[in-house]
Amino acid sequence: MSLTMPKRTPLVAANWKMNGSQAANAAWLRAFTGRRPEFRCDVVVCAPSVYLAGLVASSEIDFGAQDVSEHSLGAYTGDIAAAMLIDVGCRWVIVGHSERRQLHGESDEVVAAKAEAALAAGLRPIVCVGETLAERDAGDTLAVVQRQLDAVVKRVGPAGLARGGLAYEPVWAIGTGRTATPEQAQDVHLALRARIGVIDRTAADAVRILYGGSVKPANAAELFGRSDIDGGLIGGASLVAEDFAAICAAAG
Image 1 (cartoon, rainbow, N blue to C red):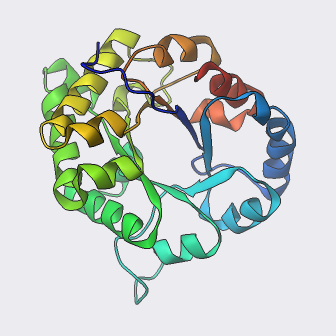
Image 2 (image 1 turned 60 degrees about the vertical axis):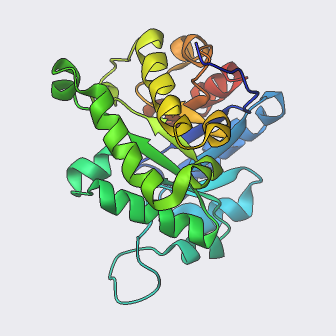
């Protein structure tokens, strides 16, 4: 159990990854938007950047990007600056997702720089941390996620982190159908909050820590019922509007 029981509004974020089309996105919004009044949580949809401007214009849902450059405007071919995302009405951004770390070689320092760039522009970063199966089997889970967290906190401070959010995503449970047990997830969330609390207890109590790792309608309520799990970063299940709506309903 957490040392305190602050009232944090749950946050559920969809990560569509590299999926979607204009037609599919419109159908998703039609299916999801009608259910939104029943949710007692904040909702953000992180879509591919090419669709963000159109999505923002067509819906009152908060939207986020899946990545952002650590650089400002300039000669960085293919990158997307935080100011550009703000310009099209984006409010959130995922930084440090395990797929970015693994497939694109993003270091802890790069992730921290991206979080700093996002905050400087007015975006709210959802910072991802998580361990591989080999790291968990070696007993290194807490050492890994705390190292990843420390790099970001050193750059933006606990209060900066609390302006966005933190997501624990065990790499071994992403898209595999495997899920950390609620107890395993809670233990890591509690350790992350305690790590922040060493520096700033107020920020630690305020920061929303999301769980990301094969969350589905069937397991969402049990996961979200733990005291330090404040919502979810939802991958595959977010592509089905009805499933994502059920997960949102389970939060709060």
